[in-house]
Amino acid sequence: MTAVFKHELKLYFHSLTAYVFGAFLLVAVGIGSMLYNLSYAVSNFEYVFSYGSLAFVVIVPILTMRVIAEERKQKTDQLLYSLPITTTEVVIGKFLALLVVFAIPLCIVGIYPLIFMQYGDVYIPTSYGTMTAFFVMGAALLALGIFISSLTDNQGFAAGIGIAVILFNYFSVSLSEYVSSTSFGSVVAFLVIIILIWLLIRHITRNDNLAYGTAFALIALLVIVYWFKSDLLEGLLPKIMTTLSLFDRFSVFINGVFDWTGIVYYLSVIAFFLFLSVQSLEKRRYN
Amino acid sequence: MITVENLTKYYGDHLAVNDISFEIDEGHVYGFLGPNGAGKSTTMNIMTGCLSATSGNIRIDGHDIFEEPEKAKKLIGYLPEQPPLYMNESPLEYLRFVGEAKGLRGEALEDQIKEVIRQTGIRPVLNRRISDLSKGYKQRVGIAQALLGNPKVIILDEPTVGLDPIQIIEIRDLIRSLGKNHTVIFSSHILSEVQTVCDRILMIALGKLVAFGAPEELEKQFSSSGSIEVTSDADVGKLKQALSGMGMISAISAKTLSNGYSAARIETKHKDIYAVSGAVFRACAAADVTLLEIKVNKADLEDVFLELASEKGEVKRK
Image (cartoon, rainbow over all chains, first blue to last red; front, side):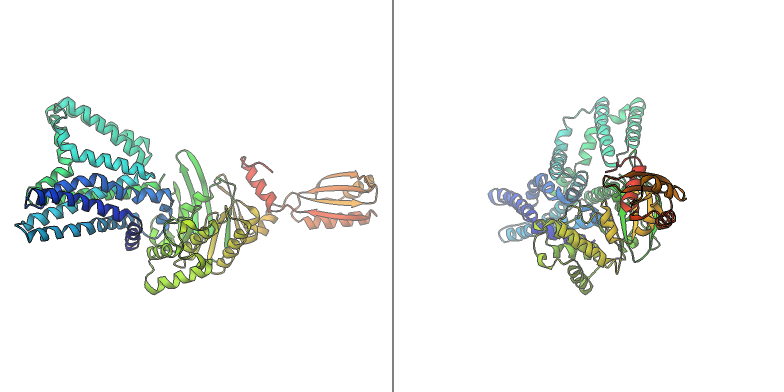
């Protein structure tokens, strides 16, 4: 694991990736703190992160697109398979390297509240609490990015899908207001989601029976619920969209509450997507 | 050293490897021979743990590659068909990464790296970018990677493909020298290459193991269809009569040559072709036929290979 970690880290700093990522993040946070803290003279540093979190839409896919896709394209994944290390170690090593690349510019941002403190009242606990949450949420998005990269050998494709997914996640709360909250509306939306799940399972496992089986089971479940307890489906879709939004959870921190359930939520998202990435890599051996 | 039992691999509906079993002993150079698409790479990928098998077992020194992958993989160095190189690195950085991933640290790592650099002769390009290297050097860096950690078994998948003749000779020499301290398995679809480098040959065609043994053994085992050509100054009828009396032969054809001599071609299925040629000599001597020339055509590995491959239906004779 340490070998993969060191190797990845070297790769990021040898190429421009780490610097572009850092510069982007610093510019986003910098503009945010200039607007809020300097122009409007607001002393809450945490507001800056609500602005900075929009940058994730672009910088996370840029950072994660090559992680596994490039290994596949260069056929270096064969080396990783033949080395005496497990795929779990490979994925965790890569993830930790990404965290370091992400943490370095954030450390620079960490100086800002201290500077502002010299000139006014900055409430330090919320500033650093939000910064911690910002880091953990970023880590969750990075884990998502690794998974997306593991699905393809085309970097551009991985980046495109990554941007689309994170953008959708960013706006999912606002979008949820426009989504039909009737139970029939939910059924239609769930059918679309089931089709997506079916395509995803088929792509990863290349097992038609498993994909069809899962899809049919889900559709059957949906029909049964709609038939017998249709009020359960009412307003379910907007609720799910809000619950699954990583950015919505983050707004709690910006409002000054250090929400432990939010941190646990992010950690489970990380574990979930790292697990899926390992499975996606393992699956390649079975095709 | 390596035991492969009933290995079978399907890609969807396509049967790539069909119930292969063999055993590999320590300290030989093994050649994996077969036409393109025969299942060589698939078998090697499964042996090195890069690919799963549909069924069957593989044990490296007693460690099952699927059950104890880490222990088994430590014993193997593998160079896949396309060398798995990080193009933006220098060979030195690359080797350091692979060495660390193989569990080497500190002084042991540096010593190992020095050793494989010496063995593969990549010192002149050590600090260049891998993407700028020639194909031969890329291949050497790939081999150096496989040698790190001093594994007992080294598996090379078509290491000479795409190289120029001088590079091919260099890589073959390298394989031969590796064979002194390691068990080497390498695949190729070129028969002469396998014949010159290996002391054991595994022939594989259409996913099946069709022959396994030392080159001479295989020749002996399969040289069932040799022929003997003789030239004589006696007339055709006398020559034919002299030869037709002897056993061990399956067909004789004789004709008069344009220069007045007569020639005969004797086909035989006998195991020992020299026993037949001896009998031909004695038969002619007894009939007072002077032999001017006697030529023995042994079936060589090329014939065996073509025969075995075409028996399976797909490969046509040249």
